[in-house]
Image 1 (tube, rainbow, N blue to C red):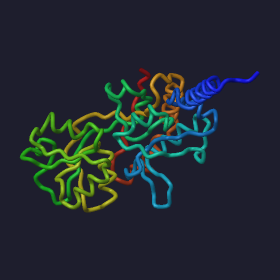
Image 2 (image 1 turned 90 degrees about the vertical axis):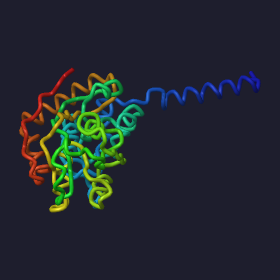
Image 3 (image 1 turned 180 degrees about the horizontal axis):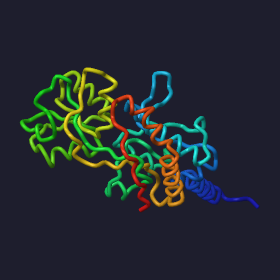
Length: 277
């Protein structure tokens, strides 16, 4: 039987549509399914010393990296089968929703607004917002001292700078960059007066450049770091929560912290309690 040209074209269109559906109809990823296939793509920061840092030799180090590797190991995936993908603050939800990563461990604070887009396991750490200034800075001692048009830097897609602007110093000049390392360079060259984010992040930058910077003031927020994953992936969230609890209970959590963040002088805190919401 000979098909007409219109039938052949119609079949071709259907075939293309089916292929597109198979490739991209459901773009989110299941962590447990990826782990069963033996590989994971994990989002981390590439520019946060002590937490998530890409080293000159191409390796990765930091507490977030160690947490990511421990979770992967509990899921049956060895370190050599993890692909680390840079996950800037403003891109984290998009990376998860588009299926570009299986999960993200990147100083990712759990908030109600973010829960509308992604799910979280954890928390695996609790930090607090603080300020980084130049070592010779005398006027800025905490968020209350940022009034008078001080120039404050933070990262696009994060909450710390707006916290300061809304709560402590409405007349602060807020500048936002893509990464905290860019904020730190702006602080170094005098383009801004302070950098704000979580104290553990700032401690890493201070330790990376001894004598150049200092962290000032007591922490003035509570930031619960979670592992972000696709919304509705309940089985994977449960498995990751189990892995976090095992890391804490086994002592591996404290060992990883001391081996990464400990050098900055940031004291070992009490481990958090996982919230299985």
